[in-house]
Image (tube, rainbow, N blue to C red):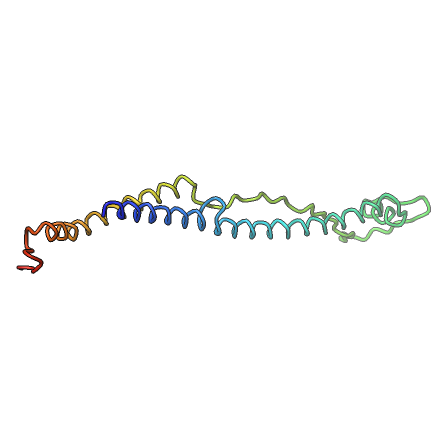
Length: 162
């Protein structure tokens, strides 16, 4: 009987450890779900940054080479060519508000997981608890069996006297 108690206790402790590791451990199912969500969030931000990069790149190319775009920006800043005349209107603020948004950087979040040593400690604790429970509940039954085999106690000749 002692061998069965030990085997069942080791089995139960190992089972608890394996389940904890598979579900909540550092490479478990729950942390992998968090990593997939984090990957999707970062991929979305990256696509937004690529779109912003394309807009800024086209504006830079236009400002670098297109004379009409350079003239528009110069007029917004108050510059006038030699052949042009300006009419200033009172209480009128013209121009296009050009604010460039460079996007924002994301920091990858570390997924929450249960450390491996906690999984092992819970497995060991579950094994010890299982051993203690098997010892407590199987002790009474094993004493009856031993007494019955020895022909002492409440059993005499195979007929219970209780």
